[in-house]
Image (cartoon, rainbow, N blue to C red; front, side, top):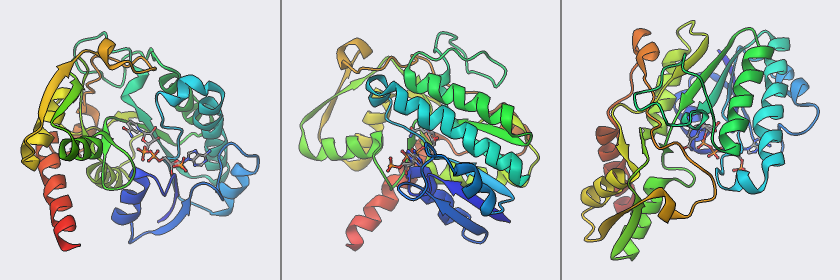
Length: 282
Ligand SMILES: NC(=O)c1ccc[n+]([C@@H]2O[C@H](COP(=O)([O-])OP(=O)(O)OC[C@H]3O[C@@H](n4cnc5c(N)ncnc54)[C@H](OP(=O)(O)O)[C@@H]3O)[C@@H](O)[C@H]2O)c1
């Protein structure tokens, strides 16, 4: 299968390259491939892909509040270009989206049919990207995920690991709930999605849910750090962008297709053991 991966150098992109190495891959990312530039459609069709996994995005949630035009240009307009390219190539499009399309007021896991109401510029830009993907590519699937972490790039798990090795006390938000998702597990689930004819929208996160505080405590405990974790509120965290307080996604549609991701605690423990082995081998 010929697969074009956008955002190939990003956190998920790296894991996709790994799990899909037996396929014919075309890797696209900045600076050579910029979805904000004209000519993207041609670049997409030139690769003659059967599938495009569109993981490229402006992902700085707080930064998007300061640079809304750039976030929209990448996540909304850029996705329209990629979707038009996918349609012209007759390719299937898998567009990565986020739990931040929801406002978090529902209190029970969000299903694919629930109405988005993003609270932040990032959430709005990704929701707009979803609509562009579905409008311009007849064979599009929006894959909403959440709280991603992996070996590559910046993420919460790596930040807490670093802070726990340098500080005696960490202050972590305890009133936002979601589902940590290991990027490698998501990449494996996406590989399985390629064997289905899922269309429309599907949710794909690690199983189970927790708060950022609970996640930090688990990281500290599993790494054996003596650091103490103090719960704080979202208001105390002083972050620029508003985030949903309850961003748990139901993965029922994915499960009905026979695909599931491991529980976040198992994935985290596996990830931390792997990092430990890599550090010890250096
Ligand atoms: N991270 C999360 O917690 C999370 C949660 C839910 C959904 N998602 C979604 O999952 C997908 C993958 O996330 P990720 O964590 O792997 O993101 P990431 O590590 O930030 O990777 C995104 C990639 O896109 C590239 N990119 C940015 N602007 C671009 C442009 N104009 N043209 C082409 N490429 C561009 C980035 O390059 P630079 O690094 O050089 O900017 C980066 O390599 C994204 O669609 C994201 O919205 C992520």
